[in-house]
Length: 225
Image 1: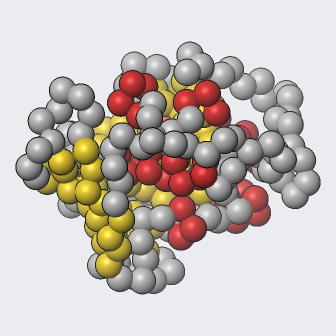
Image 2 (image 1 turned 60 degrees about the horizontal axis):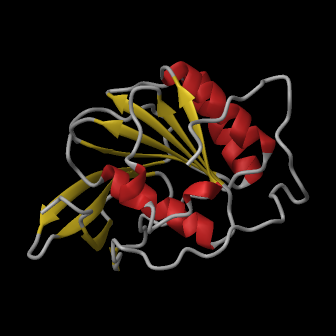
């Protein structure tokens, strides 16, 4: 996996008509996590429901936030959509845990020191029109200024891109911003033989309303029992 990509604001990222690179990554084989999908209600935590929107998935420590975000990465890669992952310098997912589920070589990783620079990086990436999914790992109780939200939301609609913010917070805390179109709360329940039920419960959805949920039975990585 790349250690990170430095973005020069004076240069545009390569783009082909109609706004996506025409070279697709190979399909991902042999997913160790064994994802199985069970969705309830009109809105599931799926990539197709997030295109053109800015969303948020949150949870307290040791929940399924990363697992459910990686599911979107896997789905995007299988559809040939390039993906960028923006992460703080001190925090990143553990590559061996997801190596069998996604194509790490095709994942653009951008390191940003704090939420403001992460938002600037997301703006450049989405504006390029080259990415189908941009994930922003914003950390604990992050906030995003309304003008930044509005700009990202407009760019996501224009380029049919899904922008997903990952945050660490309790369900009672407010969203990262009022213009977030959809917010899900992640949870994880342990089952037998190293399996975990991961759920995304929709707390806010401006298109369909809250209350739906998305569940997946996953195998934990080595060492997690």
